[in-house]
Image (cartoon, rainbow, N blue to C red; front, side, top):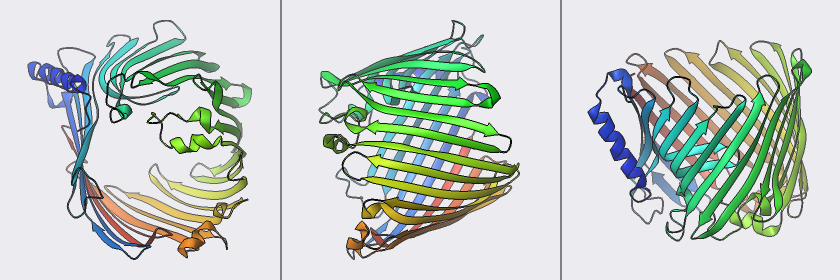
Length: 427
């Protein structure tokens, strides 16, 4: 298990002691188990055949302390055993990770403040990662919400050890419901004793007359001194129609971390000075409550390597009651380089016949002549999946089975089967 030394483990032990000292009813404790068995039969493009049989276990634990209103414990982790192949894993045929384990205290009276301690995921402003540390949030001041966090970045534990690693940041938002919401966020990450990331982000939502909405987001990289990300979208509803024009800009040397061993993956992408502008619009028509038609257009303009490309997509979907849905989608990508010229089609269905359900999904891609995939002697890719499942024991147990088949430039034939069983204890 990938644990920061002593920190998250100590929190878990403390929480266990609290749980042991305050027994409660079954309603106070929730345990969810997801067991997944997968079977892969692969014919790789080089002629090699592989048979893989990994077994996964995901376990989630949620406990509310009866004698301390507002205090709860949450933990979630996974483990894997490879019964036929080690996937090239040098550590052996097993693997696992504690994804989160934290104590949470939420003001039980007015819910004006919250404190979390332990391993946790934070998705706020420019922060989108896991830490071992503390998180606090409050909205004691009317129309203002403030949050802050500090601790150790989990994703840097395997980079030059844990010494000198740290992360902290904050976000302040101010808004009036039904009118606007603006926020400013800051994030600072240290790796091996030096600054790794330093980001400043701003986002805003403006609600205009006639239900028009304007959304914007931008990120400033204080280490490189440049704007890494800009994103703007306008939502224009008119009766059964909605139009969503948008614009996005990414400058990779400012958006991604360029330092060796840094926190962000795809480090090589930032080395080329590449940037991309994406502009387009989405249009949706809802002639009835359960019917949707849509069209999308995106124009990609790359600064150096890929030239430009245009994507055109049309789609349709029909829904039955709440959960059942069937749809089709067809698209074309037309770009300056061969790998960005292809047709894409998809059809899918999810049908709920409670307590059972069935699913099916088919995707087909046809590459133009001279496409980059011609080096693999492939001019198309195909994927098909069928599955079904049902709920048992008063909906506490869900069993799902799916069978997948794909053929693409990487695999001549790829068969996959997945059996999943989810059980919620104490529900």
